[in-house]
Length: 203
Image (cartoon, rainbow, N blue to C red; front, side, top):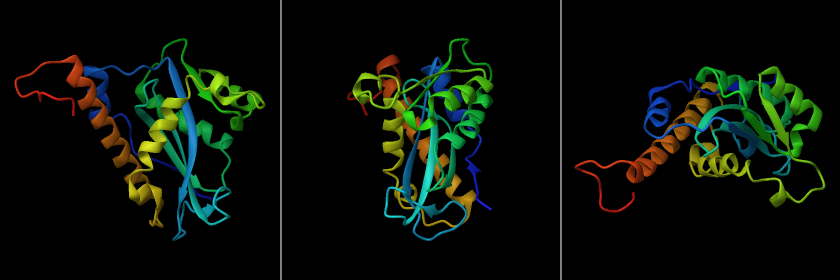
């Protein structure tokens, strides 16, 4: 049976601290998936379509408008993006009520009709890229999650997942997202606040 894992609880003090000191921007919620290697097999390994069918892991991530990770699910590398959208949006529900105009931004892989229906089931609007239209023209709100996925892939334990147990792999994803959030909090706080031990240069 295929495994679909959901990473740890994102209603944690670090995300709440970022929301308190900087503020999460939840009107725009980009969601996207990315592939990484999973050479040792296990619960979340499958033949990757982007790596000559070698073992791979798919990670579907949702962020706020600035790329702060809000939730993610992991799955075998051969899973399509569209069925991962619902469990990914489910993670966002832990944040509580979202703005009335909250919009999910998706690429064309999610399907125009199916992606919109899934978003509507979670009380969200959807803006989905159309095949055949140049990406720069319709990617203005989707790039933050792509950047966050790139940041996550800088962690070796995610870029090359050697863990066979889904729970362990999910822990590494959650830890990576926590570090990303902490780095963004420190960087944004440097420009927004002053304190006695504040460094002279932006960290």
